[in-house]
Image 1 (cartoon, rainbow, N blue to C red):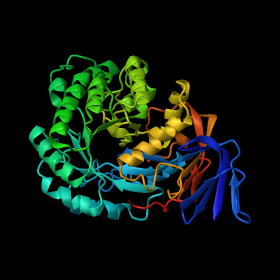
Image 2 (image 1 turned 30 degrees about the vertical axis):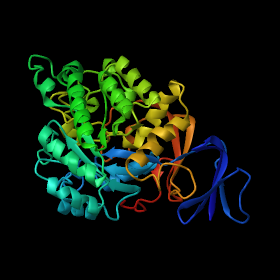
Image 3 (image 1 turned 30 degrees about the horizontal axis):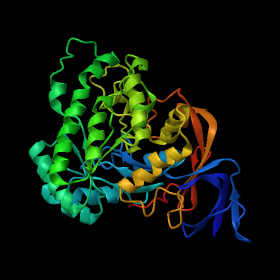
Image 4 (image 1 turned 180 degrees about the horizontal axis):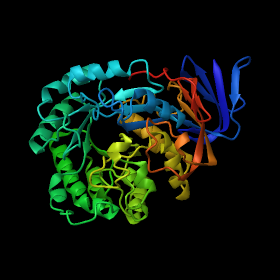
Length: 443
């Protein structure tokens, strides 16, 4: 047995001095700081905070098929260095996409033996694969993702209302959530930006109006009400759609929503023209929108935070051309998510307890992993983050461990530094470097 202790352990009951007893990768006791067994290994972290390992339920690993974009080895290593101990892989942008049992088997085979942290998987809902859903659940997917608008890759088609309703009925019976990219094409197609400068961020922002999110969420709510499925809005951006989520919650519908670090950190007003690493869909909106998202998190209208780590090759980001309209849309930020969120949360008076709720407990529960992940409590996996919440760091290319260094966070000074990460009691990262890269399990 080993014991980790600190004067500041983030437990479900609050932050307190505590000793965490670990045996066979599990937490077997969370006792008082001085309550430690004789003749056991004790690691005392003093005043450093100990948090549950971060659970990131929205990550694009892109393997097999587009490993030049990212991959299991690089992404999970970066995750471990950043305090993420569990992530859930999106069904795109791998080739094949995770929309059939055969494709899911290929993805698990690709992941085997090269994961530094634990990895679960979402399946995909696309036109024509309704007959695959039950089998994918049987094989172990945790839920499903769909798009209501073009996804950006040809192998992952979007679904219309009829296909969406049919899939929701199946998933309601199977007891699995449906994650929805909540934008629809109508409001996007209605905007003509052809005469605007594609190098200006304002042009891209205008091309993805809030109405696209609003109308998508209205559709999801209506079908959620009709089918009883647990629907989940991914990467929520538009503050104008928050009243719809609030009303659905008040009605008692099974509708949850996440937002992302980039929406909580950046603002449209400060994005330089030509800076394509900031491009994502839905887009980063203005400062007032950002504050409304923070208020919605505090209120519980938004349930949790996930990175939506969606990298690509530097060439696809059109960095040299600086053309927002042709660049791939996706922000790379998996490794940095904890520090990004803590920087902004601390500035608004939130504590580490809220970080544990938004980035550990609620995402673990959403993904069906609450019996193992998300809390420092008896019986849970000993997934732990040693976090210096008062230290600062400036993001440099050498410090980024994703496959590519392309990220809008370069040069940002962030509050909070991960000193070490433990996966089921094994220290897998420390001081900005990985110590073990193959300890992750496929969930």
